[in-house]
Length: 464
Image (cartoon, rainbow, N blue to C red; front, top):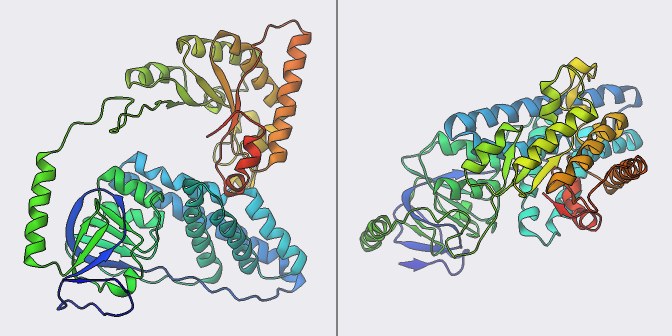
């Protein structure tokens, strides 16, 4: 057996003796398979100028690339939902949100208009600035969302430049997927190939791909330096996701040892931990995600201790017109009373984008480039105030909390808070009794918001 103490001193072949690579345990379990290499090539985008008379066509090309990328990601999402299930497919919602980040899109357009640099160069430059900012964030989970930006950026640039990514090698038998960095798009292979384990050179344990791996029980080892360069395609591999070890060309003794390990793990398998308690005994709170009053009963049957997200726009989408303040008040009051003092987090209207109110006369020629979430609300203050007044009135009957969706800037949050305060003042002047304090939070859904999370925390009670 050779231990890879220095990754520069040997070349592995299928005839080499056993070699052990050390990494970081990221998803528990033990698996045997053949290496399957997945390489990601960075797209090179050269700086070039565009004639001023071609600027409009350049921006139209950008819009078409964004729309085409969205279509592609929705296709991937449907593919994962088919092979792995709807919950696993939700990771691509983060990708769609990157495409709808107005700060990212608008800054790319502004730079093109200001410099007449090609839009692909402007977009890649702005996206790279986002990636650099994410790399400096202390929170590992938020920092690793850079993978979403990187994946989406690569897809948009492919549409703009016509470049082709590095082809994926054909899997051979039970596959140990080996990559420099697993992108969420790579997870589409989980349901199509027999993926036994994952090995990456990137030292991340909180990427969407690894979260899905843990959900599916796929062992993973990360932080294996230069694994793509060191591990040849199809070589036999054993991955120990408990100890962070990767065995190349495992010896008969190692294979026998891990065969016993697998048998022991199977014998020691225990039932799922008791509800609301992790394996180490730590307690957690399980909150439900619902889209209507009927979801409360189902969430309680499932053991939820409250509602962490009520998608209030569903009330609007089900109506033929905008429900009045009184109608909304009755819905929210009924729901919070049914909660039995457990929290009900009401997300204010997340309309626009792919959820336009066509029946109410609201329409956008291109939903992708239009208003969404809090921007829709700020652009329609009458509708927004009606909802906030209804929520404030209903808060007297239980633990209601307000959450603003799709907030990308501090200015948007401050505008929303000002309108909320205005609604409070008006209701008090009308003699309506209100709860002294209704907690307010924001949903961190776009990269520009994640970068400013510390600023949001100073101005609200919680983030999601």
